[in-house]
Image (cartoon, rainbow, N blue to C red):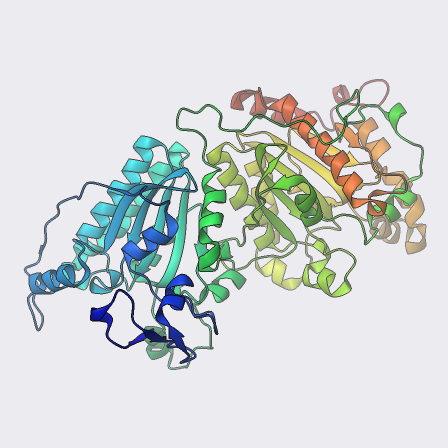
Length: 575
C-alpha cells in the first residue's frame, strides 16, 4: 500500500493507494478494515506489533524475555558492515530482531505468539530469530499452551552464513519437542514466507492457515524463473495455489482470523491434563436402552441384501459434511496431505460432539448434485485423500482427541493417477496407523463400505453400520461379473456376499447398527444425524475410560479373531 499525504503529521495517512487495484482508500477506513483493501480484498503487510494488536485480546500481551545471541558471527561486510545494517533495522522498526514473541490470549484462550516483521532485514532467519523462535517453543512446552507462529520472511540471513542455516534445524527440533509433548502448534502464513523459514518452522505446524494472496515457497519466483528459463503461471505459490495443492489447511481472511484461531486453540488439552474434553452434554433425544445402537440381529427390521445396496447408494443420503453440520459445534474442515494434493473425496477436521472434542474424518460423495459428485470423484479417494486422513489422525493422537470416521465409498479411486501416486501404499499405511493409534476410534459405515477403500478408515475400536449400509470386499456387480459371468446376477451376489447390516452384525464384522428414519436416512437428514450422534456418543462414552494400552490391545484382538474358527459363536456372531 502506498501512503498519500503526510504520515508523520498524524497517526494514519489521510489516503492510501492499493498497490493491486490502485484504488484510493481513506486512511481511517483502511485501518478499520484491518488494512485490507475494501475493493479488491488485497491484504497489506502488517508490522509485528500491528499483527499482535489485531490477533490478541486487549492488554493481554506479555513479552517473552529476549535471548542474547552473537550479533556478527562472521564479521561480515558487503557494501556496508553487517552491524550497521542491524542497527538501521532496529532503529527503523523499534525491534531488537525480526520476530516479536509474547504470551497472550485470543478470546480468552492462552497462547504464545511469535510474530515476524518483514521490515527487519526482510524477516530473515538468523541466530537471533532462531533463538527467539526456540524460546517461544520452550515457553509453550513449559506452560503447555499452544504456539502460534506468524511468518513473514525472505529466507535465511546471508550475513550470518551457515550459522543461519543451522537455525532451520534448531527451530524444527524445538517444534518436534512440542509434538512429543502434545502441544498444539498453529502457523499463520503471511506474505511473503520463503526459504529457510518456509522449509522449517512455518510448515511444521499441526494446522497451517494463510491469509489470502500470501506467498510461500522454498525458492522465490525469480530464482525459479531464472533456473527453468520459463515464466511462472499467475497465482503461483499464493495461498490459493497452496490450498489447491494440499499444502495449507485453509485460506482465512484477516477479519476472520481471531475467531478461527480461538476455535483452533480450544483443541489444546488443559495444562494439568484434566478437563481436556468438556463434559459431554445430554444427547438431543433419548437414545433408548441400547444407547442408540442395535446390538442384536433380532432388533433389526427384515430386508434383503439388494434393497440395502440400493438404499446405501441413494444419492440423497446425508454426507459427512451434512452430518458435521448437524452434529458438530465449531467444526473446522482442514485440507491437504501436505505433499501435493487436497483430495475432495475425503473431508475432515475437529469439532465438538455434544461438548466432546473429536476429529471427524469421512468420505464425501457430494450429495445429489451430479457436478459436485463428479468433483468429489463419487467419494473414491486418491492416495492424497488417505494421506490427509492419516495426517488428521496423527494430529488427533497428538492432542488426545477421539477419532470418528464416517465411511461411504464405492472404493478407492482406481485410476492411473491414483496408481502412480501409490494407492496401495496409502491404504496400507492407514491400516497400520489406525491399528496403533492411542486414542478411541469409532467408525460408522453410513452408506457404502467398498472394499479396501472403506477399510482404510475402519480399523476402529467400535465399528458400526447404519441400518441401510453395506460393507463388502467387492461390489455385487463386480462379483457377479467375475463369478457368475453375468452382471445381472448382482442381487444374487449381494445376498451371497452378506453385505447388509444384519449379516455383518451376525458375522461380528460390525459391533452394532445405527437405526435410520423410516424409509432410509435420505428421507430425514436431521433425524438421521440425531440417531447417528446418539450412537457415536454412546460408543465414545464406552471407550473414553480405557487407557491407551487397553485400546490397542482390544483393537488388535478384535481384528485378529476374524477368520479363526474360535471367532464366531454358535449363533454366528462374534464372541
